Every structure is written in C-alpha cells, then in structure tokens.
Length: 387
Image (tube, rainbow, N blue to C red; front, side, top):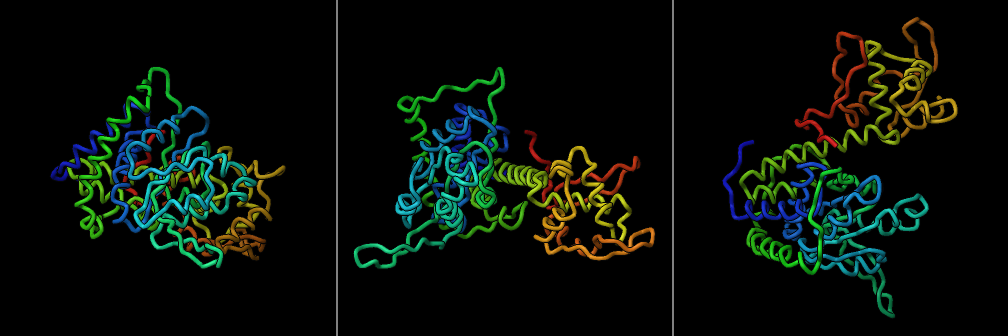
C-alpha cells in the first residue's frame, strides 16, 4: 500500500525505532517495526479490546532478550516488572488503567512440564489478560467477600525456548538470536541512557492521549484473520494513526511474521503438520478417494525431513496416527483402495474440513513428479521473514 500522510507520530515512531536498534540487534526489520509499534500501542491500552503479548524468545542465552526488555521497561506505559512475582501480586498490580507487564526469564516459569503445571495460574492470568473483561475472582478480607481483579494488560514475556502454545497464540513473536561477528550495538547503561528513553516515552504519552477515542473507533483492514488479527490490530491502528510509511510497514510486518509462525507451527509434529503431510500424500497419489493406513504410514516414515520416523522405535504407528487424527475428528475405517482390496485406512473426504481449517494451500505437482510445496494461506500475501 502507498505511504499515508504523516503525522507527528510518524517521526516519533521513527525516533523510537532508531533508539531500539541502537541497543538491540533485532532478528529482522519487520521484528524491529513490530516492537516499535507494540511499545507505542502500550500508551493507548484503554482503547484496545485485546492486549497483545510480545513473546521475546530465543534458542539459547545471550540472544539479547533481557536487553530488549531493558529498553522496553524505559519506553512502555507504566511498566510493571514481574520477575519471580506471584500471580496474586501481578493481578493486584493491574488496575482499570492497565500497566504494561514485563516478564523476564519465563523459561524459569514454563520451561518444563513440571514448572508449567506449577505455574498454571500465571499462564491462566496471561491468557485471560489478552482480552478485555476477563477478571480473576478472589475472596478478600476477614469476611471473605468475593472481589473481581482486573487482568487486562499488555505484556512482554522473554525466555529461552517457546512459551506455552496458548500464550504464543496471543503474541507478536520476536525470535531473537545471538549477534553475529561484526554486528555491533551500544552498551546500555540505565543511568546514562534512560533519560533519552524516558523522553520518547513521555512524548508517546502526549501524542497518544488525544487519539484514544479515534483509536477506539477504528476498524483497520487487516492482512490476517481470527486471533492473529485480534493480536495485531492495536499495532496496525497505532501505525494508521501515525501515518507516513507506518501503515504499510505494520501490515507487512504482520503478514510476514504471522506467516513465519504458521510455518513454525506446521513444522511442529504436535500441531497441524500431520494434516498437511497427509494432504501432500493424497495429492501425490492423484487425490484418490482413500488410502490404507499402511500407505500413509510408509510415506510419512520415509520422509527424511519429517519428524515421523523418530516418533518411536519403529516410527509413527497406526495407533499413534489414530491418536493424532482423533483430535481433528478423523477416524480410520475399512476402505476400498485403488487395487480393489479392502483394508483399514482413511477416506479423503474425512480430511476436507480439517484441511480447510488448519492446513496451508497445496500447490499442484510440478513436472518432476516431486511432492507439492506447502505455503501459507493466500490471505497472507507476503513470504515469511528470513531468519
């Protein structure tokens, strides 16, 4: 889309973007744009229906996650740092005028199944706070009077490895990585560098305050749908209010980063990848009406780039396949296959609804006879960002 007429906000966002880039090497230009818009959106939280999380994740230590949170702490609206805080302390810190939660070392909270189970209340709080009007009900005082506590607040959550799926699904995901040789950033010194960051924070507050009602009424055109649209809408509205290149940059970042996360989810065997791979098998077989379980398993376990051969000592089994597909309402039955025999298997029509809901588009087979390439849905018009 062409650039929009610029407001004072466009230059303000450009200044903020330059300050973030001064201290942190971001994984892509889109990630830098998204983080800039997320910070600005924290100053308009009373206008939002959804409070997007910023998931700052990386595969290892020293990827810049904590440094990014340092910069965010000095620029977001009313920061509340929640390192090692209890859920009770967190939701008692959230008022009708939302603060911005900043959670570092989230891997210490959710890093293992045992940790995640122990901190289920924190996960529930972060999930509930994504949408306005979701309260925590607790009894207070000697007479145990029921009281509703607010949960709605934008939150930046940093840690090693992915966060729980339900939090990632409500997040703008920033996948940090270590600086390469030759990449340089300025060292961050709180006492020295905070004044400049506080100045931009205060300017953001002054710019955004008179725009609150306009932000509340806007319904922008979005390049994504469903929960991704809910999560990204505050960033896109902030960009539209700023004008200049920001409406274009916001939608480009949204489309590319959501597409990248869709691909990451498809590559996860616990997600919808099983559906995508079976769709590819049916397509490679000429979209036949049915395939035996053995045919499907042979194709899945023979793919050297797929995870299925490592799904057990003998690869994915009929029982394991059935358990995965059952989550999507798909079960095996006696089917008649191409050679006319009847065997246990799956009919193609049982997958069509699940494919439509969970799978990327399948491209036609190319002339070499290779399996078709999978891409994201056509409603995501930009290719994923390069890592």
